[in-house]
Amino acid sequence: MPNYMLRISFVGSRYHGWQIQPGLPTVQGTLTDALERILSHRVRLVGCCRTDAGVHARDYVANFTTHRELSEEKLLLSLNSLLPKDIGVLAVRKVPEGFNARYSPKGKVYAYLLWNAPCRDPFLYNFSWHVPRPLDRDLMRRAVELVSGEHEFSGFAKLEGERNTRINLRVSLREEGCLLRFEFEASHFLRYMVRRITGAVVRVGMGKVSLEDIEEFLQGRKCPYSAPPHGLTLERVIL
Image (tube, rainbow, N blue to C red):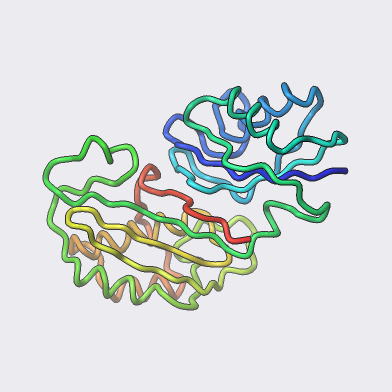
């Protein structure tokens, strides 16, 4: 059957994550409804990963199969005419039958934004974690260096049967005045991993967590800290 890939962008503020949940607005549910209206048959939409409630995506990949041969351009226009303004389909492409949005990608890149100033920025408020107190950014950079590289990340995750918890993670921290941007790149991520790493690193900057604590989290001790979901964005899926 023809297999189609969607590249999607969404603001996650009013959604309970990607995955369909009965009675709750989700990105997968909203997209599936639109596809089924267009195709007039049931659709199984496969996503590249789950996202938590409130998390955003600039580049999310999904795929579905259908017995119909579709015009990519017409499907793109039809979907965007039906979808709410906080979900956009950026591209539609016919892909080989074996392509699976969950298993075919080679990696993902996430960004986490933190606004470190006494007053919040209303233009960034829905897309960043506002931390008004001063942070020791030098210590935070040292913490970022500790978590970068190949480590066992089970201490930073909620495990759900994953066996491959050893991950080669690239992390960077860039400062643009009051705006701090964390970037994470890896072949795969564990649930809550990025938010818990960010939460721990920020608390290093607050003086609430030591570098020794970070090392212990990397050795399997459970990290009890997390960053709010709305600062997290899936920036890119590497195919």
